Length: 286
Image 1 (tube, one colour):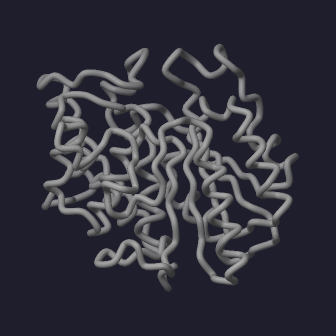
Image 2: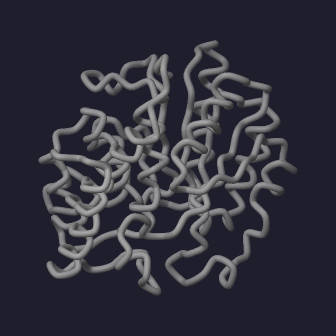
């Protein structure tokens, strides 16, 4: 964690840079998992600006912190964050889902520097994160493990096995984020498999759990800081109340924006929206 935490303005600007990177990646192949990538940008801005320990010149440094996307189809959000952090060149985003496999649609640790786990089979990433966190405990390092899960995959039994495991082994070096946008590929989470009250559920399993608005960068910052500065032998779940497609109104308004085609006119609408936000934030270099 850096010494002084960033201002709200800086975090909002960085989130917009990440959203721009997401759009660059998804535009390259004229489509992809846009909704659930855009809505993670604010959280990723906070983590990659203020908290994660990651050397851009040596992303496999054994002393690094880890970021594991259990929600592996949101790979464009992770890739854009790695560009923001300086791990990947921006040009790499132009290869999303291309035949050259330089940037697979789902996270792939064997092909993309800075990706710590190959994911996409939903439900498995939290278990991987638990294993990494337990390993850090055994080695007695101060490494943190971040994990992102989707509310749709929270219907998987393996998520709750991992949740129980993390509490039992007192993995207070594990900080997870639940993207609670209430939408999945088959429809509303409430209709497909209701999640109920996730804060109450994770608390009942022995976690620190808090709900924050997914665009409130200062609330996210505070929640992560609390997990860093006050370990209490409990893992932390930060429930992000989000809107799928956050940051681009034309995407947010779609009934299903899980994975869509992105024709030029739609792309231009999104980019114009982002440019207007950049102007409001006085970002001259956007």
